Length: 150
Length: 150
DNA sequence: GTGGATGCAAACTCTTTGCAGACGG
DNA sequence: CCGTCTGCAAAGAGTTTGCATCCAC
Image 1 (cartoon, rainbow over the protein chains, first blue to last red):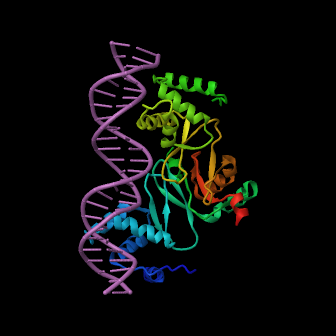
Image 2: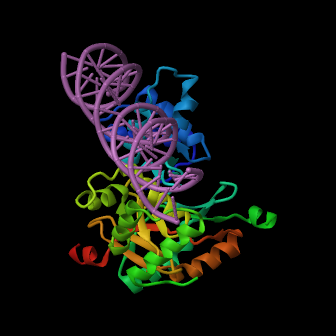
């Protein structure tokens, strides 16, 4: 598995993946891909929809939900639960998932590389026989900026 | 802060807490308390409602939601997000929160004492300056039983 | 041309809220 | 009694689905 970095490369990868399953590369799919790929944030369906509304006013939010689900099933993006009542989505740029720290004061989201959890993973496997998967986990707490403000 | 263990003790503690805030000890609240206290599982509002339907058919699900929110605000129970699309609730028996491992194959839920995360907490604070709080976290993976079945 | 994809609207799930009446302290 | 609490029904958010039409391949 490769991890393309440019938009063109990723776009081709998406097209290829769709083709492999007999699925189609359509305008809504291409637009949704671009919004997700370009964004640094974790977007909700509503946010994707709004970002598209200007250049594609006829797009339906149902299409956003369907597309996002499809991309997730194809392993192209990850659904993230940041605990704010709606699913958010993040384009997968590499195999290295990362976990999230959500500041309960300023709502900032930081990312933690997965390997920080490696030790925890081993401890849990050793003590409970439970093998953690790569799914993202959201921790809450207080970020460094807000600690200084205390 | 004490950590009562018997139902009678806990019930008195709840009554006391309510009184302290000028709130009332009512039949719905007592029933909901009992269901939550007796259950070993993490119940959803719907499940609490169903457990009550037999002895109190007129109870409203809105009351369950309101009561559960109240108990949570009073620090008597914890809302848990197990990633199945609805909030679940767990009576707090002691100060020691625990985290959850959800098996993605058999849906079993195991509990992990919070202190297993102590090291992780320190690493994250050292490397990112982020101070984790005590909120519960849900990990997914494969439990020991399902590993054996592989 | 044909099966997959889309837009639209309606349905669905979980949760919250407004309100009049009931009830606990 | 007074203010809280309740049941009921309706509203609300987020998400899914049915269906006729449309469009990529």
